Length: 267
Length: 261
Image (cartoon, rainbow over all chains, first blue to last red; front, side, top):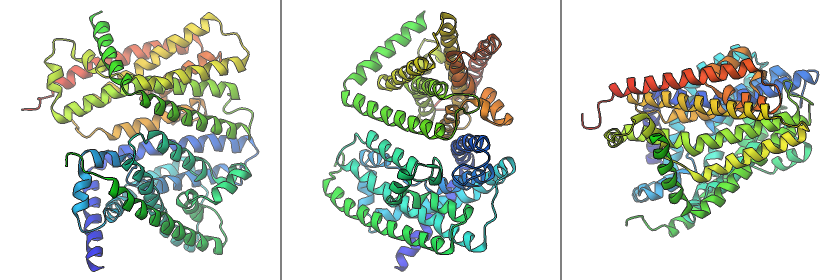
């Protein structure tokens, strides 16, 4: 356990220090990402204003708050891409990973978690500029802030597990593009990334309640921006834990099968 | 003419390479279908709340989406793969092989790659525009068709010039891959008509990053909003950007010291 902790601390520090070196590259990446919520924000505040001020319970200022916090949660959602497995397998990276005594999932969790530390630091000025431009309506309580800070890491873990699980498909076929795109489309519509679920038709909301996506996206945003009742606020963290365990367990089982499929390239 | 022949040869090689992998065509078709379905769902959601968005009706926004898909297909088919290869060549030092060839260096680095299957998006975009025009129930005169073609040509030219300028930056800053992310984000802003954005963003998307000229202006041509002034402006800006990009490419080359240096 002590070893594992040391490993996490070391790996995270390396990631944070490395990524802080590439500030310009990271900023390009993050600014490109900001364009997406700005499109949604402008579209939905335009509609809200045309509809007498409110759509799905959100005013223009409410949408501004939602989509500004969105940018941080989206960044927390960046994990090892399922497309990356093809590269790992083809380039022989995986053979090296298999030789290490620690499960490779730990390596990915720790590395990207360290990167997140750099991302959060780099995100603060972006958030400040967005807040000045779009005037969000936001007044969180201390409790909400606390839950939010736990929830963004819960979101990070849920998405890590889900995308790991998805990436395992690469061990059987490399024509994964369409499958991944289908997953990402479902995620876009059901997670609250496109619009808050309250804007969606009721049947979509019902569908999303049974999926993990919203716990990795809308829930952390709502925890800070919305007015969730106290029990729902804390219950959300429980749902996150549940999905982490479910998706993580599935990822570990899939990994065990996948590795049996694997014969090293060039080996 | 030599450039056209050169381009055609690379297209043929690219096509021959890709038709070997026919399943990739199916995969691309599926991916494009998913993207199309997502786009239609978003439009349906928007128009379940409102009749017009920034003055654009449903069929008009559908036309805009068609243009966005079509231009995106063109970018992925030709512009982006060439520029990505150029970035990699600078990183790996293999650009030297291209530079010692007798052809014009800018032309050569701009035509080496051709991804046939990405053309699926061009076809789907054209179909979506066709459906939108049909829904608009307005006969498209030859002036509009001509304006659309010209606006599309100018838009593609501007995007190519913009990409070349950015990629030339790789001579100074080697890690330019993240530009791709930046571009993809900004291009996605073209899914809405630029008129609905706040002023600073509208100007940015028009003059800093030519998304407005590449997507909104051709869509204006299809929906009968294009003025002669806008079209003239598009032609002028496209010409200026293309000349500027060529100048910057040779300026960048002077600063490129090659792989072994």
